[in-house]
Structure formats: C-alpha cells, structure tokens
Image (tube, rainbow, N blue to C red; front, side, top):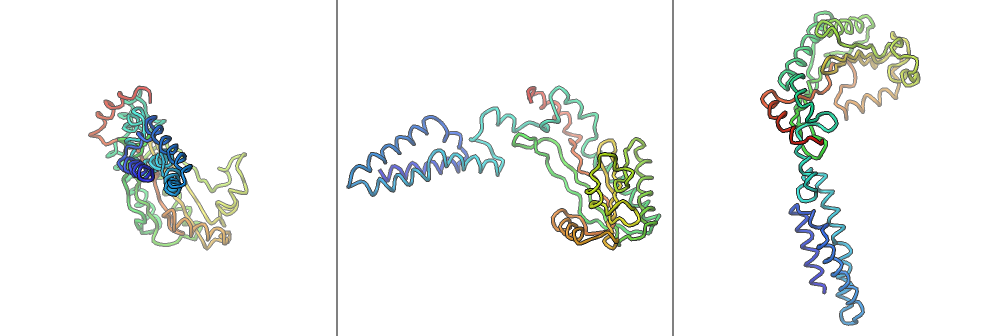
Amino acid sequence: MLAIAIVFAAVLVIVMLAGAGRGLMSGFAVVLQLVVLAAALAALRSPRARRHAAIALAVSLFVNVWTVGTVGMLRAAETRDYAGVSTYAQEHAATFPGRKGYDSAEHADDVYHFASYEEAVARTEELMRLVREEITAQTGIVWVEYAPAETRTVPNGYGGDSMYLEYRPSVWVADRAVTDVAEKTAIAEAYVRIVEAHDPSAYISQRNDPDEWGDYADEDFQHRRWGGDDIATQHTWQTAAWLDEFGMALEIVDLSAPTADDDLLSYRAYVEQYVGEPREGVILSINPVDAVPEAQRAEFVERMQEYPDL
C-alpha cells in the first residue's frame, strides 16, 4: 500500500513538472486518487499494515491531485506558461496579438492610424531633445540621462504577449538643483513653448497652480503634494502635457523650499530608491508608448481576424 501511494504521488509531481497539469484535474486522475485514499483507509484496520497505511495516508493527504494541481496552476501563473493547465480557448487567447480591452478584430486596421514603434521612438526622442535644448538655451542647465530608454513586450491580458512593444523613453535630469522662482518659471515657460510648437492641440496643465485645481479638488492633498497654494514657496512644480499619442511631464523638486518637511524628504528618498527618479532637481520624462513595429503591422491585422470574439 505504501509503495502504491508513493508511486502515485511521484507520478503526480512528474506530471506537474512536465507541464501537463490539466490532466491532474481529469476525472480519471480523481478516481485513482480516491482509490488510493480508500485503500489506505481500509489498510488502517489491519494491525500488521497499520503503520504503512498511516504513512501512505499522510503521503496521499500532502501530495494529491488537488494540492499538486493547485501548485501546478500557481507555477503556470508565475512563469506565464499555461500549456497543460488551461483549456484550448485559454491557450488560443494567450496568443492574441492585441491588448485586452483595447484592440479588436473589427478595428484592427486602426493600427495604421497610430504611430508605428519606430515612429513613436523618433517622435518622443525628438520632442525630448527640443525641450532640453530650449531649457538649456534659457538657463544654461546641462542635462544628464538619469534612466536609459527601455523597450519591452506588452502583455496581451490573456496570459501571453501581444505584438505591441512598449517604449519607455529616457528620463533626463538637470545637473543641478533649481531654487530660484524666476528660473523655475523660465524652465516651465520654455517647456510649454516647445510642446505647443510641436503639437498645437496639446493639453497643458500647470498642476501645482491653485487655479488649476478646480472646485472639487482635495485641497489637503494638493497642499501636501505641492507644498501649499503659494507658488513662490512650493517645494514641487509640475507641468504636464498630453499630446496626440503620449504624455509628457516636467517636474521641479526643490528640497530647500520652506514647505519641504520631513514627510517630503522621506517620500523623495523612497521615490529615488524604488521608482527610479532623482531625489530633487528638474526631471523631464515621457510616459511609455505602446506601438506595433512597422514591419509587423500587416501581420497584426491579419492575425487579429482569428479572434473575432476577443
């Protein structure tokens, strides 16, 4: 009895490691598991077999169809390898080339209405360069690349990867802190000037300006976020711009401002360590952009037709 329980448990583990977890939840496997459990319970009635039966029962309780199947599904979720633990429909959806909730077969051609990956990279890099050059011309600031650009595959929302690539432009910071209100103003104005020239329809907001908060803003939050409603003493300025296909932000953090308290210092230290932004200074960033490479757009449209219900 003990040997049977051990062999059955070993088979379960081998099947899980092989990625065939779906079979563990089949009716046949469940019946076999129940047979092993029943045999172990029956053997407990025999004094001579009781010891081995107890060990077999313990093995069956710890390593069984349900526990090993659950571990297999958790392992699949962690590795995003759903082969053997998902239905055919789930495996089919895992190869969906679009993004769940954003792309559909009916509107697959819309991919041609947006920038390709190569165009998105070129546009964001060009705008970033123009803004840096204008601010440098006005203030003499020298820019340092704080976080390099990255490209990664965009998940499709069904356990697999889409055909989209996410481009995260570089984060640039000034080589020095800016504490003078006049210089902060010159930096913000230069930024706005270039963004408006690049995209006249861009929506731009000076988010630390109390006039931008609106009637329903949480004033306590706004005061903590920016350092009060007096621009001259605020510790943080932020000018956000929403262009046609991406967002961009200019942030000026001044830890020497009179409103910079211990909570702000702790928060900026956390941001520096875990988010990847400098503790203070002038920070220029562009939001990540999702796009399909130019050479793959036709393939994207063709493959999307295989998923009319997603």
